[in-house]
Image (cartoon, rainbow, N blue to C red; front, top):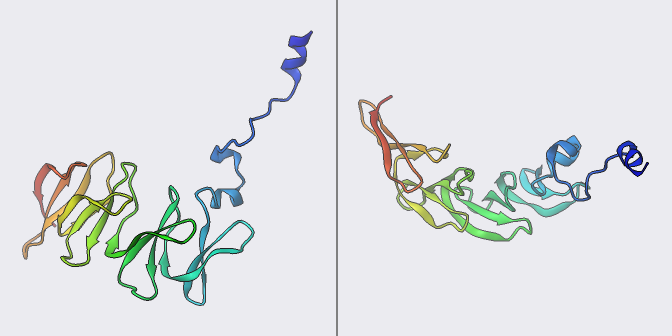
Length: 173
């Protein structure tokens, strides 16, 4: 009899279940942390109640992922930095261009001094030194980079997460 009772009783998920399919559409918006919102031309971040948890102060902002988000300051609109959910910089604004972190923890970043692209980790340390004319995000541990610009077409290649060219096709536009 106990067996019949347990089979007919409703099944409940354990508290704290974070499966995205269990969340409402509204809750899904905030699954990675506060979301960015614009007020008077500046971006900040709001919580689920609509209150600013990070006041509007950025000229551009991206979504939080793994507790951090890329922002471009209003004071120096040419450089990107990385903030935590408190709004504190974990990486001071120091990149002209930056991509989102790939599943391998690397993001392309354009060096402000040389203009070359490399790949940084979440602490802002170059894991692949800036030496490319352009770079794209990693997919399956490979990324397409522009090795060099030429008047008659650009030279492209694929690199691995160590920065080694694994497919050097000399591809051109």
